[in-house]
Amino acid sequence: MLIMKYLISYSDSYAFSLTLNKSRMNAQTKHYHDKLEFEIDSSDLFELISNGQKIIPVDARKAFGYEAEHIPGAINIPHRTMTEDSTRDLDKDFLYVTYCDGIGCNASTKGALKMSQLGFKVKELIGGIAWWKLDGYATEGANAAQGLKIQCAC
Image (cartoon, rainbow, N blue to C red; front, side):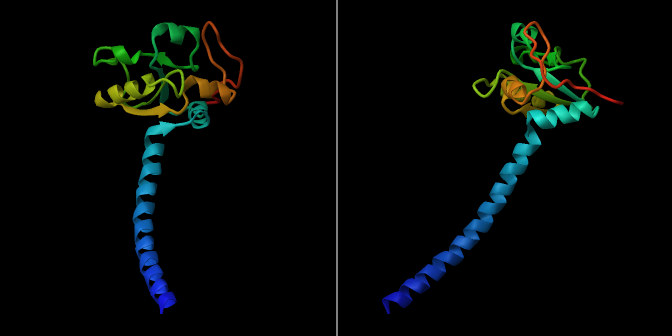
């Protein structure tokens, strides 16, 4: 009798668990879809730029960080100075990818938020310029790093 009661109880909790898991799966799917919608990694960014996509990296750090080293083709708009005026000349048909030093820095998140509030399509580069370099991509600036260079055959 005790075994039968356990099996029924297990069966009921398993059915509940399956329902919960389906709901959880939907939440997981949404979570990962949203991450891909708003974040990009170095490899995907490199590929999109190399293929001539309308994409512009935005270094959200202060000017001295950008001058020292930045992603090729990047523009510098420090997140603290992002306003309607400082972004007036940017084309809203482009996708802008904000970045900063890396995972210990949130300038890219602040920049992405501000650009989004200003009506731009924006993603955030996962890992910032640190992971860009770890993935073997070149940088420009006073302390430029050697690596794969962005080339467009278009």
